[in-house]
Image (cartoon, rainbow, N blue to C red; front, top):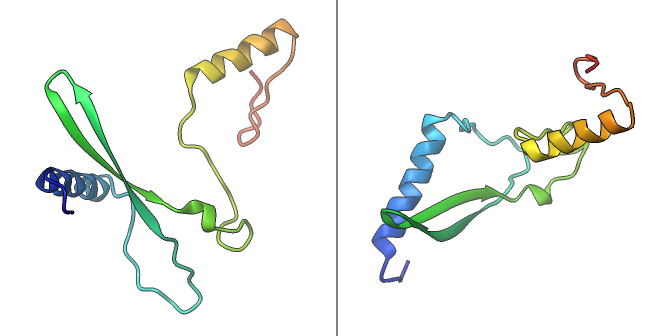
Length: 108
């Protein structure tokens, strides 16, 4: 933090950590001997907004260091792009296909 803008970056980091606390993104637990620690990395970006420059910090987990079946059992995507859903539904309609949602077994 030797940048001229160091105070702005520190404020941005605090905002990111506060957001994680408010959203209850994580829970701190004591480390047991069998736990493997996953590292994290700060990603910084300056965004131009109508009100001026915004210093944005994001804390990213290094999930690529995990091994399926050892560190985790399942994966999920919390969000999806609507363009992707529209494309999927369009293709299914054009080819007269059914779409089955795996988790709930509902047919569209």
